[in-house]
Image 1: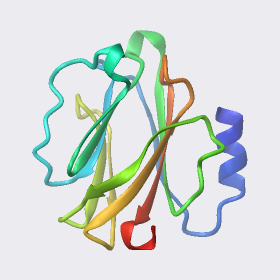
Image 2: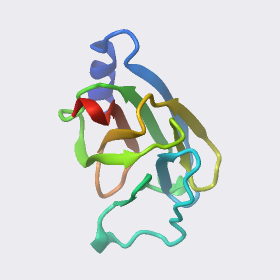
Image 3: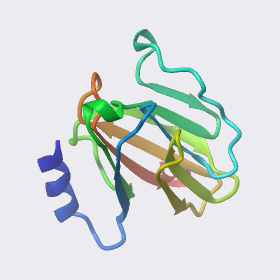
Length: 145
């Protein structure tokens, strides 16, 4: 998938790349949510329930934990990522603060993304739904859906 991400990033229009980070996640949970969200994801995800859980203003993705290697996260604006890995979420979440926060459950890394609308369409793709080592998030204004 890293080769696919590299190819995707080379094809982006100016302004589509927002940010990226690579982390070793102790608990293997990554959230994309309104910066003022009070959503809680305290329990480890059950494989039978899938790797994604969502609430009105947040999405949580189960990833590999630190002993299995780092997790890379790339955030893009208005980018088509359906051909990069496996899409595990494509839906609308509320962003009343106008700021999307992407961070791990241990708060080791955080990215803040300004969102002009009060709702955003998030498309989330992962490299391997069984052992997530790479996450790509595309953020779009929900009014453009």
